[in-house]
Image 1 (cartoon, rainbow, N blue to C red):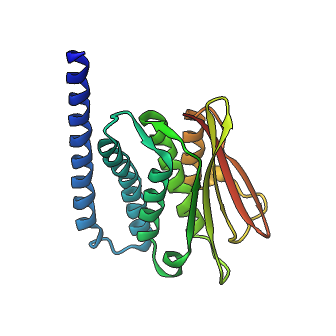
Image 2 (spheres, one colour):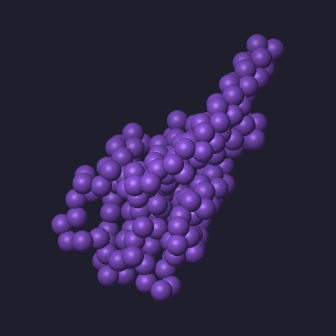
Length: 202
């Protein structure tokens, strides 16, 4: 038992160091962001920064949970959506993001790809040309057999006919991450908006 307690302490210390290291990287990247003048390069830079921040939030919540291996998924999704919105500009920053989640504790190795998928999908939704009263909804629901479903939906413009997700870097990454979770990224889009979903183990 003493050895187990010692290993748990070492794990928490490693996670604490990972959290601090990621925060340092984020701070350094933010210092450099102001020097980028090209709008496309700036957008790509900030998107990369968001991906790192998604991992930093995860490690912070792992450390705070005291479990060392699992986080409350609803709390993680809420913090992640707030971070995405804080990084948005113009009208995108005013689009409300509602988060609804069943009680799900998720392990580190499932939470990492899932957090990055959420960051990609919510960012993609915010970049839509929204109508006057836009909204985004992120939900997590248990489906049984120790799996749950993540759904990100919005009332933005429909994706263009014949839209190829492999032509969009963020969505291509989301599809690759979905395969790590044992599923494929399902996307539906029409005049009422767009919905993307993926199932995952917990």
